Image (cartoon, rainbow, N blue to C red; front, side, top):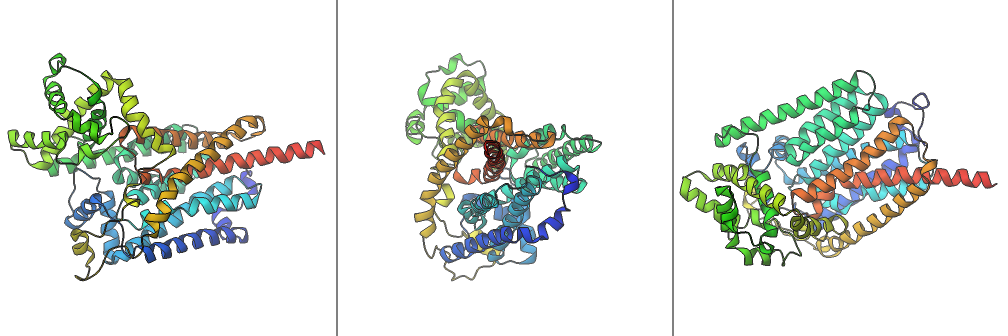
Length: 493
């Protein structure tokens, strides 16, 4: 059920009320226990090759075409207060706790629980996320990206329900940060502009204009950064083209396309080069059963081999050559192959990758703990004799293998809730704003899943933001299902 605006106490008074003590206890205890457990098992953060790039950019204060600068800027801010790497874990898990709490309390504030026990159980499983705790203890942008999404979702509820200007300000800051943390966030302005069209009063058009302005500022900043780094006057860093070429390569072993039949000479040349590696591509993808992002990064595979030939032929520097190929030839090649063979692309890339939505077996950084690299040593001022290896491998050996199974259970529960929601749909008496928000959370989740599957081979860490969507959908649906059951019981009596 939802409360009428006049029935509600101010939000900050709501947060301090005795009714929220148990919820605060759940949030604090879960995050504190998660912090202690990770610190015991992994005294130092987990890393991967991306981590070195983030730290290098922060240390040198330089824009890197491979990675957005947002997370590196975050590292610089943390570094201003403390050079200790332990501070990073504390800051990240604190941000997670606060934003998860902010979103959860926002939903509870506008959708009062019918059953407090059900609410407490759902809150526990939302906050007590092994994935979130592990990524909080990693030098990676995934948790910070999820934090910005939690802020945007909570702020959007206030903007639509209360026409909150403070909410709009928080939303715009979070959107700007999200865009600079991960370029896939470019989808968000369109989604939220669609949501804010349902707003009332002048905040409707101001919020839409503000989103366009923030997006334009981001666009201009990336163009300027690209020009300073590569002397290329363009918005694209080339990363999207590399991703598209990587994904399109999954169909190469299953086609017999004569390069002479391709009108575009550059695409024909690149396709011919790919045909020389058909066996390697088939091996990397297990003959079309798996997907891989390795074509972007491994030096002995065709995309990197072609890059080396391009550099030799043009004498371009590595960053410029990387960006030029990604922005032009690789993107055109990917688009050509995907549009010419859409069903093969669906069969050998999209569907195998989409399985990771329901059973994310590709655990990535969570499955293999890598110690701190030399770049992190110099930036975070480590003693030369420190041992950064995992003290205990309980997390990677015992908890990580269970997480994909938990996601299967989550989807089974979600499917059951969907079925019950359809059955009791006539009992869902939501006000206009609540209906719009409920539909938006569903749309946001579907758009995020679909775009992520299309853009890149999936790793488990990509699904961290979706915990909020599942939590919100299940809670609101269960709330109204229980309300319907209570009404039915009273009618029978």
